[in-house]
Length: 351
Image (cartoon, rainbow, N blue to C red; front, side, top):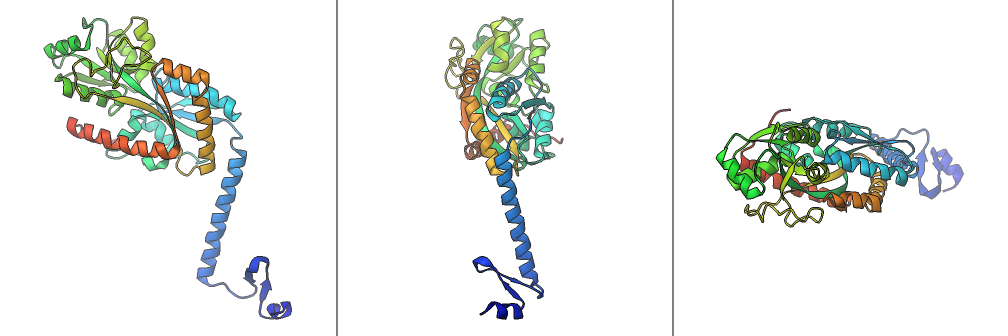
């Protein structure tokens, strides 16, 4: 058909065999298809441009826990290295409270552009089980990387005469319901880990929840509470200074950071192994190229000499899990702690 014939019928020939109708109304289905196609093309173009220019301004890392705890230490250590790797400031913003929910909610509702991130810990996988209704869904947050795993250490105030975990269990049995143990919040790793420990050791203590590990440790050092399932990053400086006494680590084997400490398993509580973790998240709709850029930069930061030495000296084991690996890990964590909560009889709470 000639160009003149095309024009006579209201059709303009276009390259690549596509015909655009002139002067004739498009069918409703055709308009919908073209509109949808334009949206897809625009989204792909936007993601490509974003990936090429990212990052072009400071990155905000929301830490869902207060200053002084292990999460804060890890976040600031990694943020300092991301400054160098990404060429933009990575600014830590502590937004503590509600077992990490306040910080997670803030990031879940932030623009999905890679400039607002979340670093939190194991309670993130527990909160959907523990709370009947959250202000966000865990699916609103995209896993970027599992940063590191760490054991807890059962720590007591020096006023207690126990020098070993066996001695502590004996004292706790003799003073059933009188000793108080701290946690970094209802449903946190230290809370559920201690509930599991009490169940297996046959003891009973009073639970005193705090907004984070830093506050919990402050009251432990002052003697307001007697026990805390602490993490190495936050606890070891106080332990080495003699302000707290460590009894055992909760990992399956002894930690290279403190090989003198026995495991809970060695101390007569069979099948007890509890570890915590730190993870990096972005809002769910963050473009995949941006998530990959963040992951690559995070791995580089974690494997740098100063960061790896800092974390390993405090018994944290670097994982640097990819986004898909982290997603699988999160699913398994939720299933594990759901069983612990069920056995401990902990009921879901309202926010």
